[in-house]
Length: 271
Ligand SMILES: O=P(O)(O)O[C@@H]1C[C@H](O)[C@@H](CO)O1
Ligand SMILES: Nc1nc2[nH]cnc2c(=O)[nH]1
Image 1 (cartoon, rainbow, N blue to C red):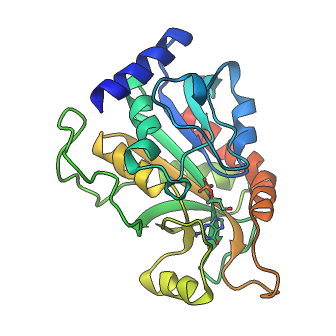
Image 2 (image 1 turned 180 degrees about the vertical axis):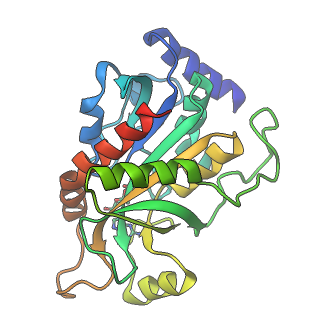
């Protein structure tokens, strides 16, 4: 695994100038954020040794390296999901490569279904904590001691200082922000009505199919993590007949992307 990480990271290092301080993972419909990175170098996943390829619509499949908020950043325009058939070490390989490139901070974003009855489609939620409902833990298997401990502490996966700073930025920019718990499960099915209810009873505010494995490996490696969900649909829609489609998920996420950019950029400026 270490060899795989180093091989991919060394390939990327040859293509870029400088060390990224922040890695950013762009969720469904949020890819346009990548176009805001200046002086960018774009590296298709298919060129990077050992990298999987994106198979989901709305996840273009490239790393974008460049400048944002006065810092060097590297963004994943497209992530890998467990439901695509990838193993956990493939889903999380890019996070390990991003750390190997030098980034100590990871920003994650996703499209999610709202469970909290106070949430509406189009809201943004700071991820305060998560519930790992994937059938497999991302760190299952022999521990890679060079990366982190066998039993990583998960009492505070999301950096509270960055959360407070994000709230200040949102207040100044008059951006409405929710805050809550994200539950990640494998997908690709969206939840039944009973499953939405179960996740709410478990204590989650939003549900999705990504993020948790990436955050687990990032925390394992000692990275600081900040996460945001765009609530693209809600568990109790006004018109229950309508259902939820991936097109709708991407559209709603796309309309919120400018606000998410302001929060991410504001935070990066303060790093
Ligand atoms: O990559 P994210 O978590 O934003 O993608 C979500 C989960 C599914 O891939 C998709 C459902 O429409 O959006
Ligand atoms: N699991 C899950 N993922 C989503 N991604 C966007 N909306 C949803 C949802 O309602 N459930």
